[in-house]
Length: 347
Image 1 (tube, one colour):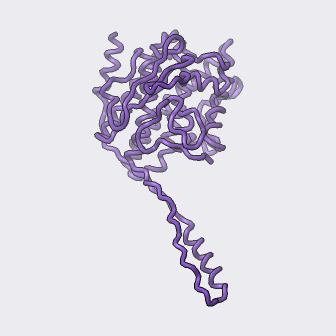
Image 2 (cartoon, helix red, strand yellow):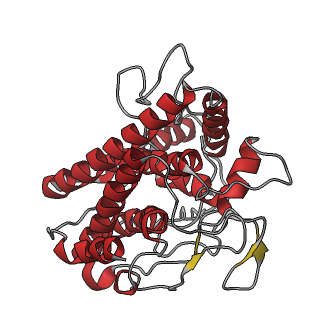
Image 3 (cartoon, helix red, strand yellow):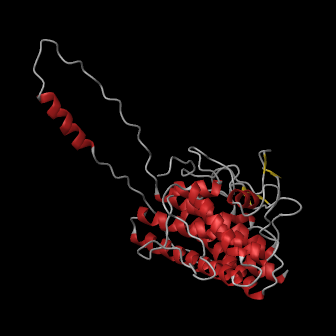
């Protein structure tokens, strides 16, 4: 009980900084197309019939993504991670005062019976300490982002943290627990099995890999949209923290993978990685942790840069669905709040 009180008390001590972001849209190519069209017309002879006046159909315009949109997108990923680690450490979600905001507010779907979100009975005190520290950081991120957004902060939507075979959403739909759905899709478990991330240390780490690995790529992908250096500095700080978390998780999984009979960890992680990569398009945005003979603790490109995902790709992964226009599913069974909530075709 004291641990839980201490854990929740840290929220009141979070640092607050000012932060805002703005995205800009690059437009090009129109002038070249127009020049080509005029050249064609000039080559045609005049006739007695005037050319009909054609009013061009205006191209659909997309509202620019604002700083607040990007921050709110990041905030909802933090809601997901914050609740996961909070349940693993204390058996409860984030405090009520950190869940309010614009849009629809809902709670965490914990499930019932096997696979229900709950505190993990850690057997390794080192992994327990990792979980505790990461939980503190995630709550601090939520507090920080909400402070920067002020009244524009979006509320916590429905979050599916269950590994149960089936759960009911607040809207009344029956869906599988998100962790079980992800594990089944990746072929980590059979079609009738469940994956309970709160059952033991290894499952907890695999569940952490499912979430935190995606969080790192999401922050990397948003970096190119930030124009204000002050806000870029703050975002870089969160990205670095998430990368530290991911490094701890991947290293822990690798160490366990070297210990018999847990060598199947390498295969399970690679299957999850391949499944996520299949959801977000043809580009390589995901990597496993390697094999017993060669580690891959830091997922990077050929230049040694950490991998990144666009917001669209992140949504495909957390919705567990690559369909165009998907607005809900997976870890967010009733969708997300804010203006970044739909998906289009990935490259």
